[in-house]
Image 1 (cartoon, rainbow, N blue to C red):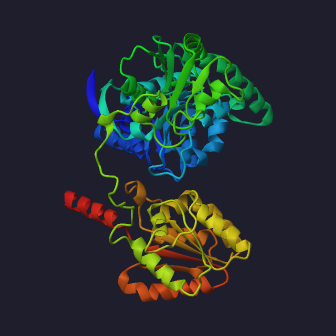
Image 2: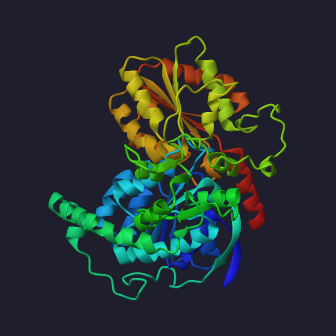
Image 3: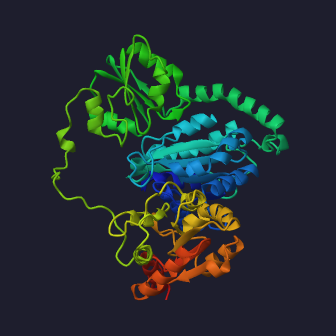
Length: 547
């Protein structure tokens, strides 16, 4: 067995390849981006490009449905996304619990406790429970690899999609991982389960969710819960170590914090949980042995809430985030665990960095085209102190900070255009929204269709930097002339579709164009087209490398 140093994301990607996937589907989003990128790179390195499909999707809903289609025809597929991306994919996600899977189907979703690069801290375990599908939550990189491989096998055995839940620290930290080899030739695993049994022929009633069929499939899903709970009870990924009278339940990555906090202290009994539905028998054994239990989990107090319910557990002291023993937000740390146990802080964890150091907030890169666009935009809005400025998810959301102060609202992918339309319909004016080229094709287009149909009194500025800059420079689906053609197809009036070149030397011209379109009482779309400086550097470096 070989060993490689892998990020948690990379361990998932390699395990998917070794499991014989025919395709990987994703939309970039930190901290999940590297799963797809690793599959794409490793696939090419291993000479498997013709056998494993890997192309970025327009958004997470599309990615999920593409992976589901691959499973439908009996091939293995993985779809990866960050936690808020699962919100976008929630419609097919919920329905796939009823259709089930033919070829193994794994959803890898990476949550972001502490909101390092996200707008919320949501815990995807709740959505797994909502859909009533199995959830695997690895505690380290080795388990990320092993669990992914097992997830494909179990997906086919149970005929269900399986969620693999990662968190930022696991996704983006590196460790030695013992790896296997390709059990099945990539792209060749299909129409046959991992255990060698042939997949059943397609049953149209399984995959066509008319109400009579959906009701039958839902009853089948409910009946499967007993099987899923039984699996958790005997899974090697869950482990109960009974010792002292004080109990700790450690979920997924939190098990590492617990072990570092208590070492081998015999006062504590520890239950490690990495699969859901939770192992009820193991929980009962721990609670029978201990009068007090601390629940340590990365994310929301999911398991703690299940244990305590509305009225608590008489005779047992269950503590965690709900009780106040652990902070309700942010990432878990060793010191947080020790504080929850009433232990002193681990002084070795201190970094020694003075707290008085001045903060260094993030900012747009020097030479970023968005700087010039925001500068011209705010100059054009001089004299309009009551302007409404909406923006979207991307590096350009940093335009909210000085010196631009160009963003008043940034909520979710694609919201800028839809919210601007709503604001315009409420009588607000002037309404100006900014959105990136990739975010526009992700979920901004649908909002623009309605705005164009009603000729809404608003101005849309598409910040076209020719790449998905915030997540590392992935390919944008529409940029330059392609984007202009797309706008025409969506019904934007050509006389108010304008392209500008955001450079300092064009500041006066761009300001005049923006002011003219802002003052127009109807829909106007300005495309500020100039490539991201890092994208230009990468493409030039690539050209030199192949010269």
